[in-house]
Image (cartoon, rainbow, N blue to C red; front, side, top):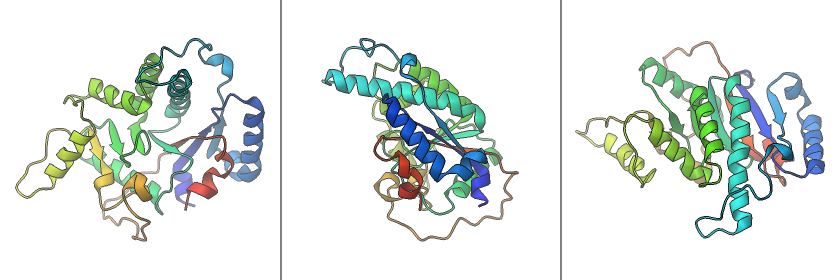
Length: 262
C-alpha cells in the first residue's frame, strides 16, 4: 500500500484499432477502477491522425521490410507520446513493458538508489535495471522529455533500443562507443575489482549487475528471488512520485498487472 502512494502508472494504448482501444480501456476501467479514481493509473491513446501518414515512415533500413520499418518507426512515436505525457507528472520515469515481472518492494529499491545518487550530488542520466533493449531504463524526468524530442526527431532512423544510447552519447560528458552497452558492462566489472578506482563515468549506471535486482528473470538477469527488501540506515526523503510507464501490447494489456506484477 505504501508503494502505491509513491508511483503513478501510465498505460499507452498504442494500437490503431479504435475498437480494440475502447475495449481495452473499458477492461482497465472495470479491473482497476480504484486506482483510476485515485489518480494512480492513467490510460492514454494518441489518435491515428497524430501519427505520420502511410508513406511517412521512412525508407526501410537494416534490411527490414516496409512493414517492419513502419512498426519500428511507429514504436518510437508511441514512446515519444508516452514520455511527453508522463515526464511532467513525476521526478523520474521508468520504462517497462506489460510482460515484465518485478521483485517485491521494487519501488522502494528504485527510490533508495536514486536517493543514494542524490546524496552523492552525482548527476545522472540513466539507471538501467535491465540489460534488454529499452526495458527497465530509469531517467530523470527532464532527461525523459529531451529523449522524447530525440525519438520524435529521428523516429524513422533506427530502433528505440539504439536511439536512446545515441541520445546518452550526445548528452554525456564522457563519450560512449559503438559497442554500448557492452563497454559499459566491462567498465562496471572494472569498478569492483580490487585495487581499481571508480571510472569517471557515473552518469549511466547498470544496476542489473547488482545483487539487489529490481526485475525478475532473463530481463533482470536474475532468477525469481525471495531476498528481503533492502535495509538501510539512510533516511528516505518525503515520498515523491515514481513514474512507471508501460507500452501495452494488444493481446495482453487487460492483464497488465495480474500477469506482470508479483
